Length: 177
Length: 271
Image (cartoon, each protein chain N blue to C red):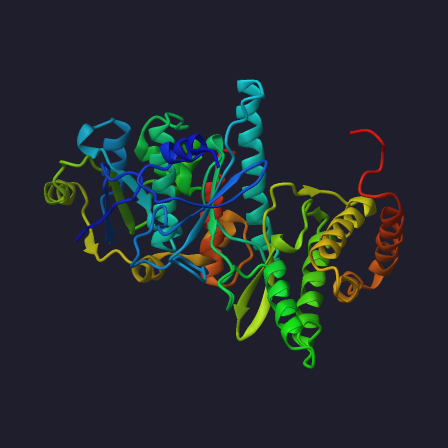
């Protein structure tokens, strides 16, 4: 179960995304990432703070944009996606909160090239993540996210979820300025 | 309209259909039918019209030094985007921020307004003109000075007061920089174009904001401008004085407005 998103400005880079719940091997994934294992070339995003697909895609869009004009802040597009989602400035801190944590819900994103086969990528990914694949939608994101913690981390007092999501998007777009 | 500017914007916005809808000294405004990162089947949060978006592009200025030009474009674009986001959290009606490419001077924002019966976009100016025209054709009815017009102008005054209470001045208030939105069968004004906005707590700057709008109304709606202005200031005063200890501050702005009327927008003779 995965989704492919394409942005009109970047037709050559489809975006692959898969959502897992009940993930149990976070520590192993983290260790492989720290060992820079090339098989783990994905953005592993903590699901706790993700409320809408729009929030996620807004950060991926910014990453593609900054990558295409060679102005990324971090080393790879994967860390850049995590960095763009987070309200924090320190990249390591961003990875610790928004990257792979002990949280059981995990969103995996990968920016593809046009000729990559998403099916192959998904089957490779399934070897890496021990968890239950779940349909990615606003509804699933909201079921497993913790809106109260989102408000706390971003320091936003916004009770309405749609308004909260808009504010998060603005946060992402204004990142690094 | 220079095609070179459009071509430049297009090179930063590959694959995005662009239709020029307005050009000012600072920026070109495009209308587009696509969202930068959501497909047509996905609905963005808290956006009224998901089929159209505005792209504001600040082209480079050839007369400025290249390095300085890049810095100015980036900081002005970022400042405007930051303000839009701030206004959203303050619940002051303004376009919502969708995406940003500050180094290239590009802001994506929500499309606002609708088409009036005569095919024009629903800016305060066009709407008043449309009503004034109908008034000319039918002198027996009350159209240009109807209660609905009074309601809208009071709301405009209130929106400006909300802005000023946060110590934000718009910087370029005209009747074409106020758009009307249809919300629950009522017209709701929204301020647009915050390209010249600034933070200021000075009564002077607030008075100049009101004065610029007053002058714009006088020149675009000469027959009814006096009444329009009265309504506007009525709404402004209502909201400004809503908090108990703001009365004194309001008096300060209103006194200053009288001074500004006598001497014009510029305080010093320089510049």
